[in-house]
Image 1 (tube, rainbow, N blue to C red):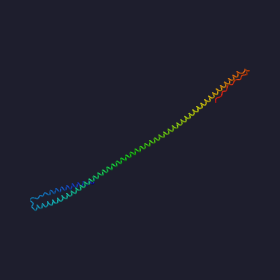
Image 2 (cartoon, helix red, strand yellow; image 1 turned 135 degrees about the horizontal axis):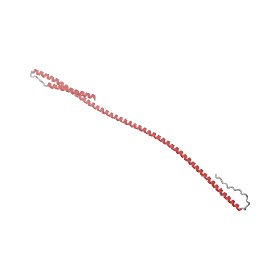
Image 3 (cartoon, rainbow, N blue to C red; image 1 turned 135 degrees about the vertical axis):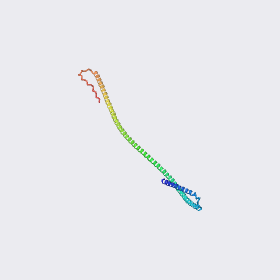
Image 4 (cartoon, rainbow, N blue to C red; image 1 turned 180 degrees about the horizontal axis):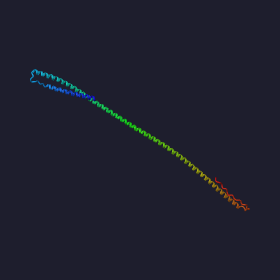
Length: 231
């Protein structure tokens, strides 16, 4: 656009210059058209004046026509320069529009890139956080498993102790029951022995009463009935 503008400016300046020159020559032609012949001049001198004026007017007219043609050329060049400038302006506008579109496209691309980077950053942070949570959950799970095992071990130990205590209590109860049975059996045996001894004593007393009274021998001391020891 700079070159086209410079050409247009130069062409416009050339047109102005030629126009000024053409106007000046036109003024000279107008002045030359005013023929002034001295009143004292003879016919021959008058013809000479007329020839001079005609020659001068012809030369000025020729120059005027040349300047008009030159002006037309300069105007044509200025018109071309104007068209060229318009084309250059349009071209520059199109280039600017294209550049603006490219810039917008680049901005959108950069925005998408930044958005993608942000999303990736958020995804990475979430992944790290998730990993930390998973690790924390694993630790908690392992700790829970360890505690569960400890509880199970303690429960098993308590169960064994309870079973041992139950077994010991059962054994004590069985032993107590057995001892009680033995004691009861011994008691029954003692009672039977006492009953038998009483019966024997009663029979002996009856027999003694039925026999005639013999001479009384020396009485021997009576042995008490033996009691069986309880087993």
